[in-house]
Amino acid sequence: MPLINMQDMLTHAYEHQYAVGAFDLVSLDFLEAIVQGAENRSAPIILSLAESHFEYFDFELAMAATVAAARRTRVPVAIHLDHGLSLDAAVRAIRFGCNGVMVDVSTRPFAENVAHTRAVVDMAHACGVPVEGELGYVAGVEGEDAEKHPGEVIYTSPEQAREYIDRTGMDFLAVSIGTVHGRMQGAPKLDFERLQRINEIAGIPLVIHGGTGLTDDQYRNLITRGVAKINYYTALADAAAQSIRTHAERDARAGYTGLLRGVRDTIRAEVERVIALWGSAGRADAVLKTAAPWREVEHCIVYNTTNLQDDALERMMAHGRASLSAIPGVRRVFTGRAVRDDAHYRYCWLVRFASAAVVGSYRNHPDHVRFADTEFRPQAADRLSIDFESVE
Ligand code: 13P
Image (cartoon, rainbow, N blue to C red; front, top):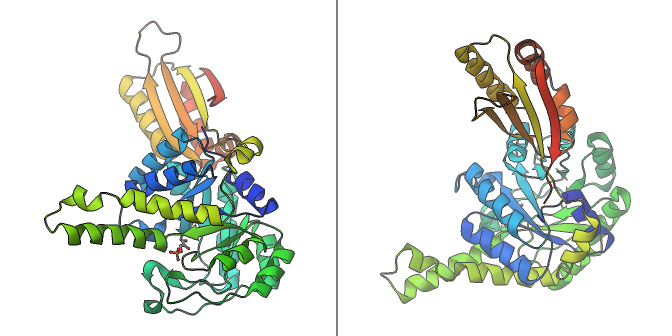
């Protein structure tokens, strides 16, 4: 089960001076191609889902496929929410299986960025999940012409970066040093001196957004100055679109599957190219040796009730499912009745946690305390409760 702790993954990249590709996926074709590319190159990889793309796919359904793909691959994987706009988005992402989240409120004034990032960090760390914050502003829109979205690039201030890290406790810093999201005419001019200074002051893995369209030398210069994660999307989307256009030109009557034939190979080839360029090829085994596996925890309670009628019992279970499943770090709540009438315990809760960190934060969460103290425990004195970590 090569889903691993993202903090460990990026610390390894930072210490060994290479960058992990964080590839945004927008369909199953992207997902399969990215994972295949990483496997062919034996590279650690970050499967990234950007909130700005949620209009193109159902986030929950895409996450189910992404988690399944991560679990069955041989290479180390982390799953990341890219450009999350709200605390709510981060909570949902962790519920669906992300083990890294980005807070993107860098367009707001510094104090607001700090307060918002801090709130996401408090929630995510209570779930064992690391957080990427952004300081400065990387203009442009992924997958589109950068000229169409000129925006104003706001460069990251090294001094403010230190304050931002100290006040928020975030784990990876996305920096603005001249890259833009989307398709560019020519490579951008990057401020490497600034990056060097940020790296000296910050001392944590740095992240580059707008990874498409840089020269090989620029990538190398980013990586030697602390960049451990490169976000990449537009080049993959352009390669996929070109493949579809070629099929459409060759065969005007091609159907949906005919047009998509070859798309996966095209995306995979580009993923493999940049993986080799960024130095993450061949690192899978070393990362698997040092990084902690990402393990879910099943919080199991079996119980009997005293004098509770069926409809009252089902109401209590429904209340529990509604309020407990909203607690950060809870992935799902199962309520059950024993199949056999002679079972020693007649009912159960199976609450799946994102990680062992949730055991404590869940127990102390006010919604859990209220439900357990007022609705559940008074009815279920006879009960057994154990937290199990997955063994795979
Ligand atoms: P590009 O689309 O320019 O590769 O940038 C991707 C990105 O930064 C996603 O967060």
